[in-house]
Figure (tube, rainbow, N blue to C red):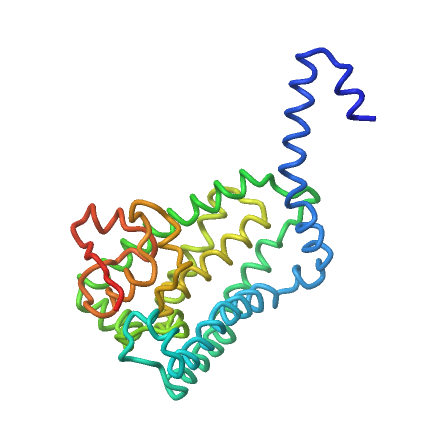
Length: 280
C-alpha cells in the first residue's frame, strides 16, 4: 500500500517520502540488532555487564591469535606472517598476562564501572541509530582516541619518571603477542579506559554506537599487539599508508622511540616520530 501511495504522489512528495523511506532503511539495518540487545535488558542494566562485556570481548579477540601462536610454530605456511618469526610466546608468558587481566577487571575495572552505573544509569532508547551516523561517530571516536593516546604515549616516553613508574610494564615484551595488549600498569589501564569512555559521551553517541566503538577499539588494539601481519590486516585495507596496524606498533615495542600513535600514522609523521615498518 505504501508503495502504491508513493507511485501516486506528485514528484515533490515522492522525493520527500523516498528520503523518509531511505532513512528508515538505514535505521532498520541496525534495528534488529538493537532489538536483540535490548531484549537482554536485565543483563545490560546489571552493574556486572560492563566488566563482563569488556573481558569477554577482549578474550574473544585474543583467542584466534593465541591459536595462531601455537599453530604457526608447527606450520611454516603460517609462520611467514609472524612479524618477528624468531620470537614466539610460551604458555608461561601467556598465563601471567591472563591472570593480570582477570585481576584488573575484577579489582579495578569493576569498581569504576559500578560507580558509573550508580551515578549514570544506562538509557536504552527504543529506536536504533542510523547506519551512517554509527559509522561516522565510530570513526570520530577512533580518531579522538588515537590523538589522546598519541599525546599520552609520547609524554610517557619523553619523561623518564613517567616511563619507569607507569609505562615500563607494558614494554616488558619486546616481541608482542595478543595477550600483551592489556598487560600494563593500573594507571595506564585506567587512563586509556577513560579516553575510550569519554569520547562517545562527548559526542552523545547512541548506546549501540558506544558498544560498537568499544568492540572496534578492543579488536584493533589486540590486532596491534598480535605480532602478525596477515593478508586481511587492517593496515592493508586502509589506503595510502594512513593506518599503521600491527607492523607499525610492533616496531614501537622493538625500537621504543618511534610510532607512538596506536592506529593511524599522521600524528607520528607530523611530529617526526614515524618509522617505516617492514614485516619479517
